[in-house]
Image (cartoon, rainbow, N blue to C red; front, side, top):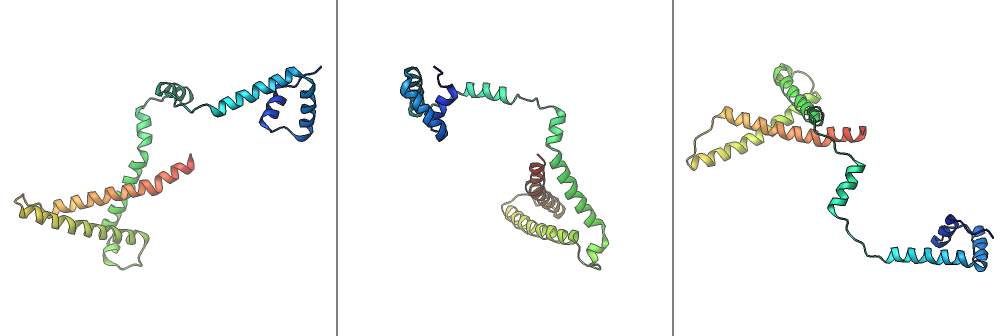
Length: 184
């Protein structure tokens, strides 16, 4: 007598067996006590697994599994440079736009039609004006409290630094990270 295969028993217990095969398996189970016991055992195992409470694995076990799946890579100097390359490129872009805008007289005179760079520079200077006003009011508050007065040049440097950092952060978040995600 041919017995059912493990695959047939598991498909029968799971309910994934095809109808044509199902009638053959049922007919065989009526005449074979060994296969019936195997089906009963598989059903009991499936019920036990479904009814078992969920447990949380230990941190050590998770760490061992993750180390096997994703081996740790050392943070070499090259890896650090590559990971920060986006920030470096963003800083270079922002500074080059800033230098270009300062060194191009047509941006200041307004002779030519507005370009993307001139519009960006106008936005940048608008941010600068807002930060400058804020720093001026905060400086006045500090001076009224008796602190040392800051120079106008120092305020400009602080304002430009803050705006540059905000521009870098926005560039990194909205442009560079999206490009990196699409390439990976």
